[in-house]
Amino acid sequence: MRRYRCGVTEGVRSSSDAGVVGIGTDLVDVDRFRTVLQRRPSVADRLFTPHERTYAERAADPAARLAARFAAKEAALKALGYGLGGMRMAEIEVVRDDDGRPELVLHGAARSTAATHGVSRWLVSLSHTDHLAQATVVALGK
Image 1 (cartoon, one colour):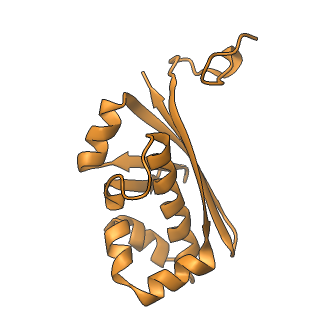
Image 2 (cartoon, helix red, strand yellow; image 1 turned 45 degrees about the vertical axis):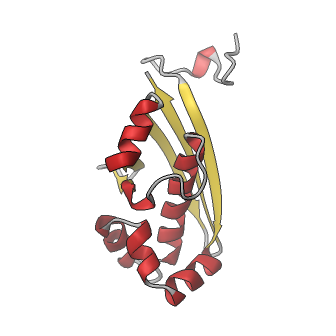
């Protein structure tokens, strides 16, 4: 198999032949994140959309779900080459498709920035335990 510079092998490229624009990953300590949310409840309003907060609040302890979504937002920033504070976190929304798979929906300036970088779609993987939340995001271009 021939390797491309971005590390994607010919055998695993999608049928649309989309190229990888960037890859990001992030790991969040759930207990620490829970503490931040308890001490400063307004943080959740700045970081998450109403839909994300509603989804998380259906769990007995929403902290793990919110931590995983925060990790996905930060991973998306990293995939675009930005750090924390690079754009408004609430403009990066984690939703679930009809089968329950996580997807990213960008709004406002975040959407424009992604388009400027040539991003046409995202791949998202979320995982969490009681203690850690992890996300990996791949930004794909045309």
